[in-house]
Image (spheres, rainbow, N blue to C red):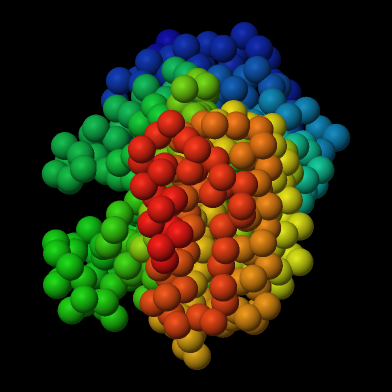
Length: 532
């Protein structure tokens, strides 16, 4: 054996019963690999090596060396791809994993770099999923399945298998990446809030020396056919960003294939209103919080879209703030900025709607039990200006009581912030409910289940009680007195404008502290309140 041609002829002569010699195979690979790396192998030469790889007696080390030689001139023959795929599917859990892992890495490189045109792999898609459950090579198979995934191949069975593996084998990046691909292709099947899929470059990085040769084959295809090769993975420009936002980017699976328009095409509010019914929702409904156009589309969109958004928002809020799952952020400052951006956009959306979002109220009911009052204080109090509740007892137990405990232990600034929050809460509650009396709200078609004649007096009583406690703790503090007087001024104005029969009287303690205050502003506010 003196050259490349002799090495190929030697491999062609090998039968299934052949007893291999390490020296012979190493010599073969020494002649074949340089030629394959520089110029690639022809289809016939690739098939000869593929036949040798099927021999059961082929040692593991020699198998790896021959796999490195499988570098095509342009495209890999369909038969070679199918043979390698079958060798992976025939893997038995008790056998050594070196051979099958080598085959998986090679197939990842071929599919990821677009070096195969075969469609027969689609028929094996479900078989690869079954292999995930039966073997311990799920971490290596997930990237391969990610590259093979197409929208028409996904089913609920595949989602169930990945979730089962995540539950019993632990959550890994490759599992989340696979679910993210499913989410992009069929948004209704998978919960939202997943990190972006792993880019193709990180999937094929384990190919080492062969990876460079496969890249050269990709370049030869580009030169020969005059086109740029693309991976079968749906790629997005934001995958490679270092920082990952809690709110996903607005992205679409394949906007060019759809006749509908996307939010990226909207240039003005007039354009949005005109084409509202023709807009295609993005893959992840949470991404609509990133823009005012998206919020408008969500507020007046379909009921199904709003339910999807609510479910995803609730899960993300609980994961980030209650369960403290911050694994998508590396640095603390990035985590804090991401949390702040999420709360801010949710608050903006609530104010845009002019109504509470039920899942946000459910999150606040849980989070207030563990909130210290310092973390994201301004934004959380801003969210509390809109609260969804069914009865006054529910509102008191989950919102008013935790805030009362924080009010008692808080400093002067915090006490004033809570009183201002209750002022905005009452204003939103009374004015918005009056405007929508007898009508359904635009978001989720919510209707009022409580009686204003029963709830308003109890709320006024609870807030007046808090003010009395605050006056006892902050004696003579003009800032707190002025804040309380402003609350009563606004409430009396609202009651007057709504023609409510309820009589709201400030506590005597407040009037006493106001009239004997050193602040002229407090004295003026108190006198105006008495005149009213």
